[in-house]
Length: 587
Image (cartoon, rainbow, N blue to C red):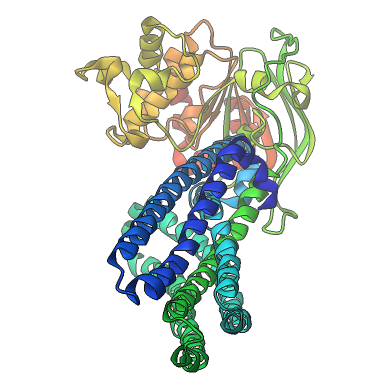
């Protein structure tokens, strides 16, 4: 948490002023019991109403001053804490956005969301409480002891002895609660992950009637966090009785030793009342310190989790505008040489192989179909090209240039991607289509929509291109979302078009029309198309066949159909072999 202190730097002035005004408030509070003692001993005892009114108004003025100082402190504390939280949340969001796919996979969406929201909020609360209360509690304890010694040093010794006892009780409780709060934070992460998984997969859960199983998982995670919360609650419940016992014993001892002296006339009654008030002030300050320790424990756990993200070295800087010269008209556009890729396991070590020793080259203007069984590594191959993941070994070249040496921003500009999971963003159709080309004209947008076979249904919308898109595109069907996602990629007109099973929600006729219109675009040069449909890859210039991460075939559809046994099995699993050529001809 100490490493995050730099975020409080711009608000140092407000933090210092807040602490100063809090100190003024404490002084005002400490003066009130002593003034009350004077009123009791000199005003009430002598029946001097004028004296009582005079000092009563003085106490009121001091109380108003203390209230004003507390309000100013609250203002500066809020400004500091909100500024700290805003800056930290902004940098954390920027850092998360810049993490590679592989780095994001190490944490998971649920924990990243929790760290960005709940953990930053814990740090923000701690910052505010630190300014408001860290300066108050020690001042209050020391000030109460000092004022007690000024009033009567003998009775003040009772406070001096009992205060460490009270602090010891609070320390004993706090040290047992702190680990529970850390465990609570971790269990909250796990519960968030379970909830996110259930909400995102609710249709699948219902389709397979797994509601009871998922409910059991939720209840298990919920019960764990409930158990920890109850343990925290039981320990918290001990605060008041234990601290109340110590304080009441202090008051009894003070009354015991002061009774005879009051009767003997050597000790004023107002002094005893003032000392009891200072006892209560010390109790409140110590309880406040215990709460601060608990908040600090939460903040330390949250600070470690936030700093773990901030300290992670970004794989690359995607904001640099640096570019290198690329010979984009070379005969070979993409070349892979002995490329391997392994996903890391939960310990960060090399896990199972996803792609093994891939070597092939793509020629200028080719449309390449990529096909294979489930888990063959088709999507992973596409993700390696724009460097969403780095290959474990081997070399990827683009236009003869090692892809690792191309600045990330320039590299990503070479690709337009349609991912497996369609994602539209809140806004309008126009704002979604212009993601890759902010300056695209309406003519270009309609051209992309026409190629993607989406223009017809967009024209039926009352607002056309300005039709609203709700979160995730939930106001469109699966096929409509997929066509809009394809159109968004086409608007960019990038040298490479990556279609990752991008036509799975389209019927065969719509898919065929899209692929036909795509070939007719004068900017269209290189397309890599991942699909499970033999009828889709049949029209491609060449077909790349993957099996368990290995390249088992790379040739034309006709050549593979004649010589490649695995490809023949794929064809046979979908179509009668003697119908494939007819379908190819029609396409």
